[in-house]
Image (cartoon, rainbow, N blue to C red; front, side, top):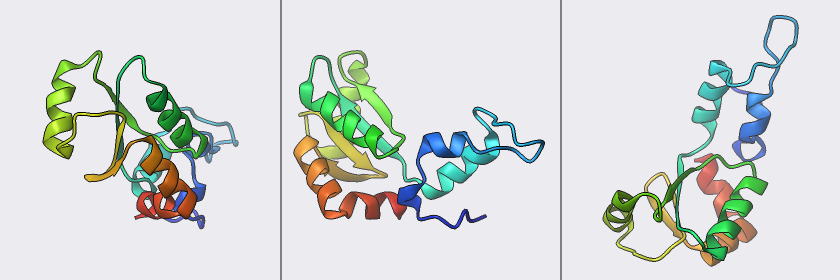
Length: 124
């Protein structure tokens, strides 16, 4: 099923707010919309900790672009540190992965957003 829009244009909040076929009311958490979202958006994981200004910045950057992401807060999830090292070989944060591809920290994600690479990765 195609919505006729590039994946980068479709944000999670927009998909969740689509009207259903029964009278046009919106259905939060609509399974069809969630399925479409999963088809057009890559899985993004953000490893963070508290307090961390760069973690807040990278999350805000992704949210401003309508990107859904799973956050692993290392200050609340000690097993997440092991997962971070296993997946990235890094111990610093934030670290952003699209699928299993490491993008990097805030500076790298901002650069990828600026040059269009982030949109390409999310649309893949």
